[in-house]
Image 1 (cartoon, one colour):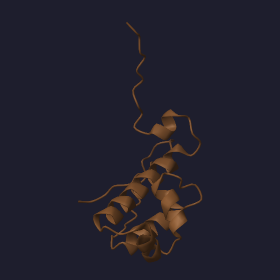
Image 2 (spheres, helix red, strand yellow):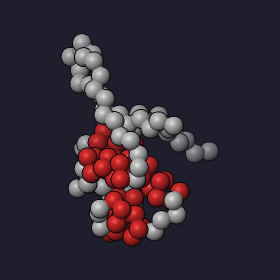
Image 3 (cartoon, one colour):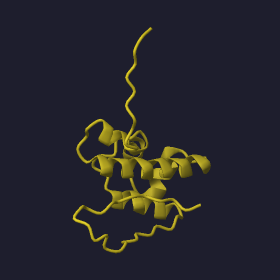
Length: 109
């Protein structure tokens, strides 16, 4: 029998892999996934979507394949707005702790 060690995930695969900027990468991955879901649900080609989003088709293709270094979160939020989604940024109250705050993406139903 083979012994397999199982490590519980932190919920962020990028952090689990020890990548620099793991929190940012997770946020971008979630935004890219939502953009891809919307494009797919509308049955658009990448070329059609790229024109609407104001980016090149190769850049859109890379983003949808998880290669989003060089694409800012602001650009991705702008893409969601161009797809007709309302985007809100909410800054919560002071947590009264010495630790850093937390950045997350929440999609409303």
